[in-house]
Length: 154
Length: 419
Image (tube, rainbow over all chains, first blue to last red; front, side, top):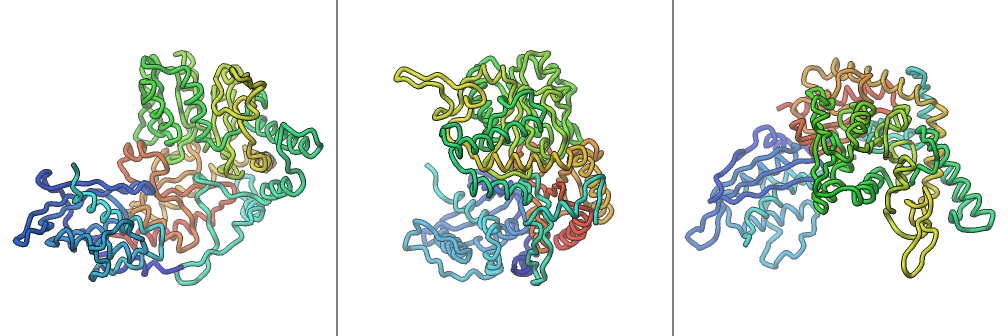
């Protein structure tokens, strides 16, 4: 069995102990989505504000994370919030796809424009999760919730 | 040899092949499997596994059909199990034992058959805040169709039912659904008291006994139940078989649940005539080998004696509550009643700041299996103000050494995740 150190890398524990961007944003203008892990009862709330930059792309201008969860889901949410701030929604989609492919998740219906090969930076620390299959859902919960928050609903 | 209050745990452990294995630990060091998740599903003794193998090797045929001797033998094995299960729970007649898939199906049967006939917009069903989803969601599904109200018996601070307002809550109620023992808190509920009050108010009582029957001597008549559901796999038996017990007169008055073979006396183009109990509620070929296995499980527990089983669990629960508090210290919270005699061996814990998922991950590295999550009781989790708990649950094959190792591993988990 892989060891605990594979799963709980120092950087993950750091984000778990000192989560970044905890809180709420006013909705609207920010969008909000809630994600649940029915397995363990964890829930996560993602608030995300976007604005259009000079190139006409939508950019994550602010993000806040609420809810409760295990160290993996909380650290993943915290790292995600740090990683996506200032990124365009296309860049966020690429990052999400990259993270999921690290988790060995086949991303269905991904359009060709999405690049699953972008550098993950600190998020690489989540690579150990793949050895603990029941925890993959913990690591991806925040990302799925963010995707839901930025998907236009009409 | 470990002897706790009448059970010879070392001998019992030897009857469970699965417990005789090592799990690989984090450092490659093997750890003995310490199984503390029996409230989810119990392990199975050799006697149950052998009874099922023997059924398939020697006696397999469909039941209630063939005229040949093998089919008669299979039917006799099934009906023999039904009789032993009936006497295990003090049922007046084995015709009152309905085999279902599990306790969940048994409660859905009651909701669909009894509830579908007896509940309308002016009615109400009373359940408790500590129910398992299996005694909540079937009523919610039906309420959406029939428009009746669902009321909830609240909890006290120490995880008991708060019965202060029981008479007011019962006003206009047709059915009370109550768990006899909480799968989260271990609380043993005063079913008889609730049943007496419910009957006085003109309601019938459905008891979720999934956690009770495996651990506490159970007599359906003494409980005052009208209907009672439990499952085989928490009771040393296989998955795929559960039981609904009901008073014969009540079951007779209820329409069938699933339609098909076995549950009819006659089928014509213009309709059908239902079979008598218990077959009326047993459409299709039943899980015969599983029923035979459940019969063997009940024999195993009867041989130990349910009084001895209960005494062992009270004693081990007391030891666990004391030891875990001593070893882990102040930042361990055990939800539910403080008094071991008022509860079963279900210990739902908060371990410092560590999340249950993380605690269970650390424990797994030591071969210790516990449940982390909401235990299919989300309304209760909301009352407790938590998303999840770490739950260790004890059974006949657990001993003080298991508890000692759990305590040590909990300290490691707590320290690893200290904020």
